Length: 178
Image (tube, rainbow, N blue to C red; front, side, top):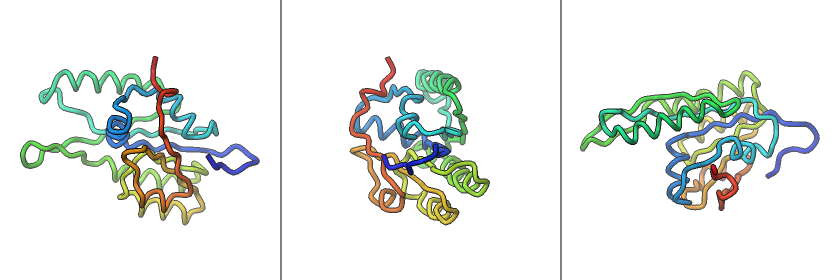
């Protein structure tokens, strides 16, 4: 990683939860990550000011077992230091397909607002969604750096090009919960 030398940098980590989950699943077939270890890695052990996790809760009516697993996971996240959870919603579309609403826009707004308020020096974005590029461009205009965490099977060329640095994750063994 290429953090500036000298002083400790203030880092905020922005996690697109669904995107992170599916990237782990597709790249490594495992999702049981120790978030504290992973975030310390992603921040290069710099000063983590806050970790923001964005997702949408499943419906208990659709699948009680999956709902219970997700609620257990959300409860786990509540014990990760400096982590806050933002929950959007799922909306049904054609063919019963569900889409997250209010999640990506909230992440993008928080990325910009926290840069404007000077709450961080470096934003670490854990997502492969290139829709975040306009907000990243605005954050960089404010003099902040943005790093993207990239997984081997879900990397985004466009995000990697716009961000100041790409943190490549080719192996998650050291981050798995025991």
